[in-house]
Length: 370
Image (tube, rainbow, N blue to C red; front, side, top):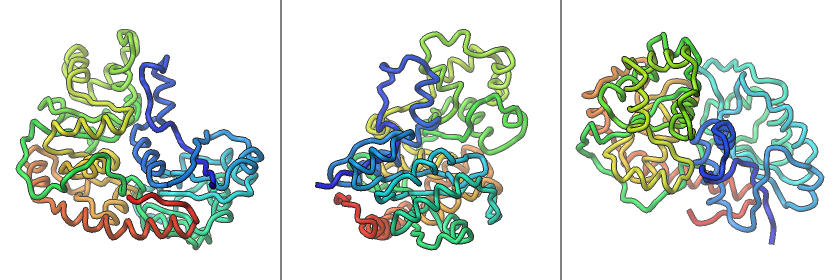
């Protein structure tokens, strides 16, 4: 029987076994959304599999594995340099398959300044596979400008993973207070986020003002408040003030109470999916927060805000609106959810799934029935 390696983070994290928040944050790649496409690929590929870390011995993999599969994210970005991974992949003689690669661009400029190391990495994979799977047509165009032509638009593998059995939602009536909102932010130390209006900041403020639950994926400080044993001395005064400005909260005590009462954080996709049973809908700017909801049978609507999010919404038929034109308020959230055509998403998903399965087949990867 053939044996494949999957280059990935751990599939789920036992929070009780991690000694520090920094280690916990690192284990999920600074974003719990990474757990979705990681678990999806593990579930979709059959046969004998082993997890490979991001630092490995190419010679050992050549001797012990029949191929390496790499679940990817928005790695075509000016902010991420994959030189080290390029060095390792160039030492492999086994097939290497890249799944779900995306481009990170504020607009569809077509001129992403991709680091030389990242370009080397993608070329090394292209030389070792039949084709590369990408999240959307814009990413495909970026690779073609680099001369990499064997590219298949499959979307993110998480699109084809059911996180629990469900009946697809039809048109619905929602209770606004029974929603799960999500926004996109990393550390609150980024001053412009706090001081400039954006849909991301306004979702945080709307959640706080209306005491609606908020899903955390990469918000470092809020995640630390929920997981650290002693959070009293985590932040200095400047960082606390930025957090207060993020949420337009009057004082630290009220904000801390909100985070501990209304923020939700998951390091296990099964627990995440089951927790959604208590909500009427999900709404926000997170791709994987939206996909988790839809693939758990829960109505969800997304606000796309860059090329990465728009290309995947367009490809997958995810109910969505443009951040530049959407007027964020509770009435518009309700209206968007109740008017969304969820059937179009599930119909499109079934069609796109066939393309994804053909991609796996063309790269000689054994696929489970999903």
